[in-house]
Image 1 (cartoon, one colour):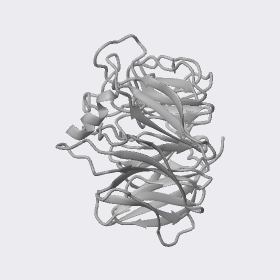
Image 2 (cartoon, rainbow, N blue to C red):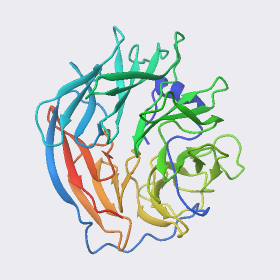
Image 3 (tube, rainbow, N blue to C red):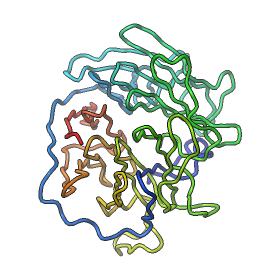
Length: 375
């Protein structure tokens, strides 16, 4: 996976694993992958809808029911506002700006009902000064209603949340004083966010919703102590409860969940056969999927990008090691379609019905919009 800078490493001090993971249903051990599935003979039924130019200096995007939203600014990495472009195309509209004089906005999320969420920082973090003030903000562009959902008050710290949105909820992780995690969520109509859990070891930004549960990457469930290569997948009910492990590998690295499906990536294990021309690297090496009580199945074997997979309906979008996009069916033959253009940095996003894949095209960032089969 991509190495962390000193700033990212500081931010990751209350994490338990390097990236994200999840699975669903019965607990399964996948520490020794089986042979990969046979080569697919058909491709998923993917329908292209639009290609939208977002502009220059664009950060990680999100998608609502009718627009792509993204952080942007006058220079690369100097994002201090949130812009929105309709899925039908057209001009960008600014829907939010940083409220700090030297503000920075790195993370955005969006709900189908139109609410946009973003994390407003007092400055861009650096290795020499990782401590910043931050706020998780919700805004309804149609009414102008703006709310601060969470903040670190007047005391800067290095643990800036990553806000996500799925199925109408917004959720984010913040650090506890013991360097473990607090997970909060909010939906329009609530007076304030509620805690899903507190004082839990997990990887911020790894969260996905799987029905009425939150799935995330936590510590190894195998009883291993000290450093492990990865972690394990855990699930906790949205209305609170005791987190339960879903895998027992200590190798999980990234995940995506939707409906009953959960897809996760896995590091090479000590008992796995390793191709001699690849060797053992940090990058994920296997892609797995599980659905309810069905046994997990391996979708891909071989190095690929550490960006987490995006699951929607019966497909998963993942990136090869060079960033090339792939859309793979989770049912039937597990057929794979390669998507033209690539970006290893900007993840695929969606709203359950469509997937938006942003890619660099020269000096511009372009969003490809595709419809996906349900199921």
